[in-house]
Image (cartoon, rainbow, N blue to C red; front, side, top):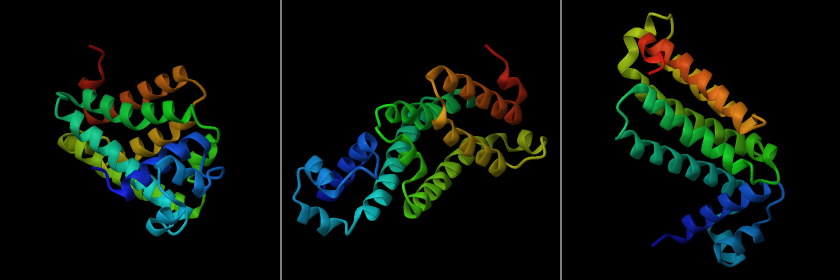
Length: 191
């Protein structure tokens, strides 16, 4: 059974995605979670705390799906497809339903932006694990695994601004190829 706090955070994520944090009132979240305003405020003192919790929870969910799906991935190309699909494609699709995409992408305020920075750090750590087996080849390009992981995450997260799914797919293909070329040139060759 889901805890009240988790139920509220999940409702906040859905409500923020639909309306944007700026347009979402605490009563909207309480209604979506099926709790009273008092219960909401007992769990979270203000909307900023909920924004931080929503970003952290969303990161947990995304990284959890990635970890689960990576168990079946045989190649770095497959692993990158999983990572990029779960982080970029799913987010892009969810953002298409939002009334205030820019508010969501920006993190809404300083605390939200700080939470996004923490989230990106967690993503970078996950990508470092993916790329570590290719450390020798990556170092021959003059980069470290951490640098390449940082490039991948920063670029991938910026793709939320694409105007169409077609543009997104083209950008993701280029990003994947760039990473594969750095990790192992033979991996970038089409099958």
